[in-house]
Length: 364
Ligand SMILES: [Zn+2]
Image (cartoon, rainbow, N blue to C red):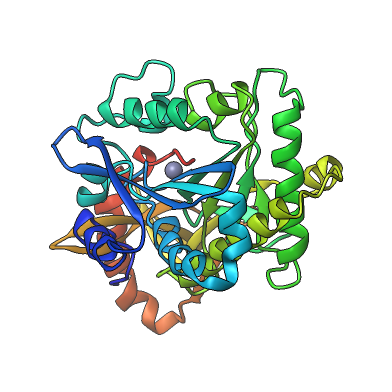
């Protein structure tokens, strides 16, 4: 299965070349492997908004949403937004990971766990940009796997938000309160279009995460997570909803809405790990020489870059008589006849790849 998820530095450069005459583009510095890290500057307003994407190289949807946002901002109709705000956009903080389609940077470090130690050039550049800009708002742009659901009874989490905690007690500080209110407003505006597909992310405080650090420093910070929309492994829908969220947010900030939305935020369904990509029913499987009849197997795809394309490798998540705690994006029920034919294929694939499954347990 091929898809459009890959967004390497080369593609970014193509986008930047299109806008080279229209926006200020600085090179902040260089990645471990010497690739440039760009910062775009758009607008001339007093309020400063810092946005960064692809600090995890395999989370590409929000980067693509940024390249919907840029032409929209440059449109003369958005004059009021550009006179109120200056946008500082780092579209690809981790170009090495973006090239290799990896969450980690070239030193195998998760940049979103490096906020305190600052061992990596990419993390240092982000913090330097933050200190230089002193943003009024920080937007931390990510993507999440297909395993998330919007609450116990919701559908897949197509988009999730978080107003990161500023301390272990998860105190609602003034900065957090304004981020929560902004998220509540986005949620209210998008709910009609995307019912059962919006959630809020777990808010356990982790000072090694950049968002938590900025929140602690008093900057209202919003984490965006682009997730799965039914049937859309290219993530064109979540790209659209991330872009919608940007527009709603900037118009909201422009109107400087002072109403508190903290309670509305807390009522947004919580992100849950309750989905897998595929459940196959009516399968006979062999475990330690014993044949288990009429089982369900849950399969999760792992994305890998193979010859310049992202391919989905099926891995075994779990099996059982009835996987009632799991939802799936797709269900297949084998009939007696084709189970004989299909099973060796699935078995071959999933057993071979299931060792990968546990390695990928992180998001945000
Ligand atoms: Zn991420």
